[in-house]
Image (cartoon, rainbow, N blue to C red):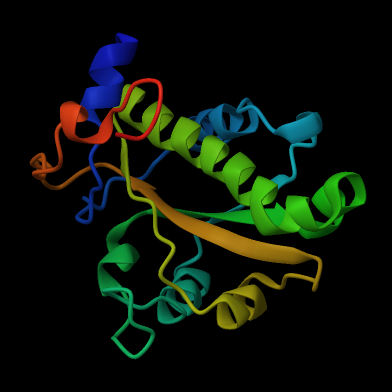
Length: 182
């Protein structure tokens, strides 16, 4: 698919068919994430692929909806055949960049990997969504993370069961400035 088509076709999909996603397609999506740029080329992201329904259930139970930890889990995630947890290696980034690495760079780097993965999914005819609404400590337990690792996002991966209509947003003119803020 042409790049501009992929970029503008990407949608946050929250409904999936039961059709399985091949290991090869999952590897292709993960590879796209790993190809992203990172500060100092540290590649401090890690990817945990979850297919097991019990493990998916535990991950989903750590999520919440509408940016409120008191809200119920995002149950729709269970329909996705695959969940990919994007995890940040805080120790690796701190060893090179100290506090700046932990406070900012690791999230920029992981977001770059995530966007590559979301776009790759579209290019492969798959769908996904960037999920960051989860209780970090609980997700860390589910994923078996050591203290030097932090879950950044959960990406469902599968075939869309919906057309994924484009949501209204601000125009490019409303968010673009030249030379300075004005």
